[in-house]
Length: 255
Image (cartoon, rainbow, N blue to C red; front, side, top):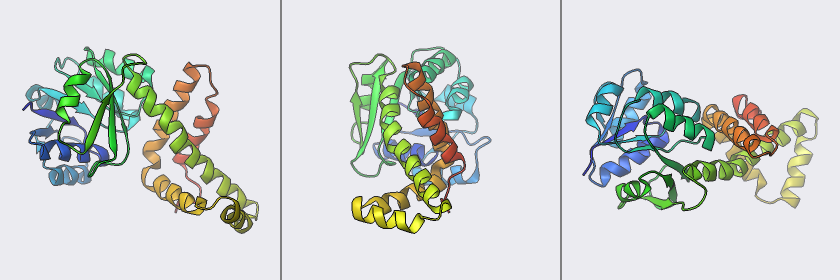
């Protein structure tokens, strides 16, 4: 089994790493400049600390990058020259994925994760581009369902992830803004009552949106920026998701 390097184990990355460990792989990570909470997640996932990124790259046969979208390019630059299979599974636009490929200096496998941090079935990893089949094999026997996209070019996985999140996370930001507007205009209670009549279940979605914005807004803001960039690149209005990024940077009613 190939030795895998994981850059860097946040909530999603650590869960993916744990799945690979459970399938029998040795998964390495680098603790240098990482937080105590990251180290604790990595330990719980069974990852092996090798100290720094240079050592990680030299000892790994494959690399997997799962990090906040605004860090994806800088992380790719940190392992420039690595000549093995590299999976970039970050929530970035196709244009950013292309920049990541240039930074690494090799062809990358583009990935997009849809679903919660994997524990059971329900998390999908979409793959496109170079050596996608290799990573399908890598995730065999895990709770992650790997699917290869045949159409859409080498960065199709990023395109799919962005289009999916444009609705799922973009609409949650809109809901937060609508609820905040109602509250600030003095009709918050009436709005909630009307939603209960005409949109049953929306109260639960609003509660989930507030929770997610509080816990993940700092990361989702970067994702909204990537979506705005992607939409502009295909001649669609970018303002929807530029505004959603602002919502997630300073979530109204998230506490």
